[in-house]
Image 1 (cartoon, rainbow, N blue to C red):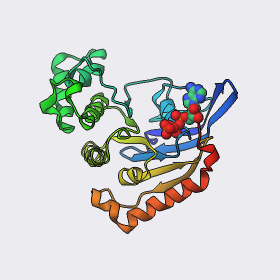
Image 2: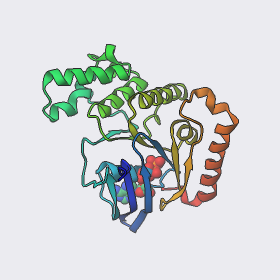
Image 3: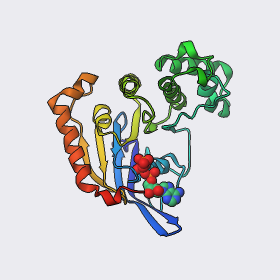
Image 4: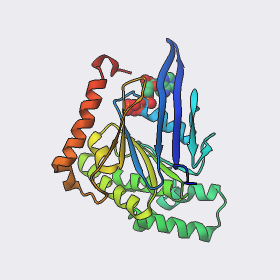
Length: 262
Ligand SMILES: Nc1ncnc2c1ncn2[C@@H]1O[C@H](COP(=O)(O)OP(=O)(O)OP(=O)(O)O)[C@@H](O)[C@H]1O
């Protein structure tokens, strides 16, 4: 028997109660992410991307449907999912090392084990020299690299990234995109990332799920057939731009302006 995909989302819906009545945000979402795959969800603002990621993270409950991680239902947050958010979420009073090892301390890992693991992941994200620095001494890009190390150090089954480069300037964002790809290739980690930046999704992902406007549905699943050896120059190739344009056309066709407001 073959192993189940790392992540399976089955017929998932989410309804919020609001002052003006029930609000259907996600409608019958089904998708999966295989081990070692990089999947991106793209969609207009308000289509429910963060809600979906929060449900996968166990921070919100679905109204219907289920999320399975390696075949087991998700029933709350857990160290088997590593999360990185858009806004830098490092503890300002802890050093980079203190931030990265925080989860390991909670799980009562011994000091020598912690040191070895933290050193390994700080080296992977290129921050070994900044282990003792406080977050305020880091640039935005370095903070996000530290946040990625903090998520990876628990060796989760899947990394969940919520617009991790959304607050960075264009140049830093591109540097971090290349950096993330190199980390993913080196470690083989499985990733689900959400972004509204279609170019970013095509550059990073093996598969892109395009979501319709609210209520969010999976409008199309696009296999990014660009190979796995990608560099920023790939963004200028005709093949890349064709895939990007197809997804943009799809999103534009499905997002009437009136529904863009939240
Ligand atoms: N707790 C909540 N109660 C009521 N409505 C909510 C709640 N959380 C989110 N929403 C609504 O659900 C919709 C989807 O929000 P969500 O943040 O998931 O979208 P998004 O696609 O991630 O948007 P963005 O790209 O702007 O971050 C929005 O209309 C939002 O106002």
